[in-house]
Image (tube, rainbow, N blue to C red; front, side, top):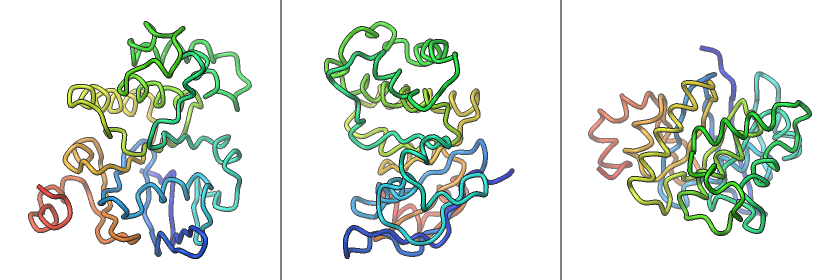
Length: 236
């Protein structure tokens, strides 16, 4: 399969502090890759770097073209959608208005039909379409954040800790829907997660990040089957 996103020798900085060191990995078209690691390993920074939100050196390529020198807005317009940690929904706006904001770069006439598609994936959002996002539960806000990102019609969907703070049954439902979105709409996904078991069950490929550096990469199945890796890095 072809590569849709390629990260090569990526270094990222917050002022004088280096957060990522020579990070390299690839995301295949239509695939799901997860980046695993403890708090402070650099997972969130990796997604922010791809989105143009932090200072970087190295190369980030989307469909073979460099995006590491572009603005965050331009990267989004090229088809990179980001579901941040904390969800980032606009609480004072309705569910439907949040979804329409997700389509801000689009000029086609299919926005309304795509909203209905999001409601098909997440029926709870249809029920709450006219409610303000700030009135939703944590799980519903995560559903809205994912749906808003889908309104971009992304080539690549970046998800930062999608399970964080959610009840187990809600997590199960959301990850099942992510799998369906990947299978049906062929959206390539890069997911960062602390819940290694959950992420490896969804992803095809995994990379382990430790203090800003990739220490292991391989298929999810191979990493799950390696006892030393599981005990040392994954905690189960």
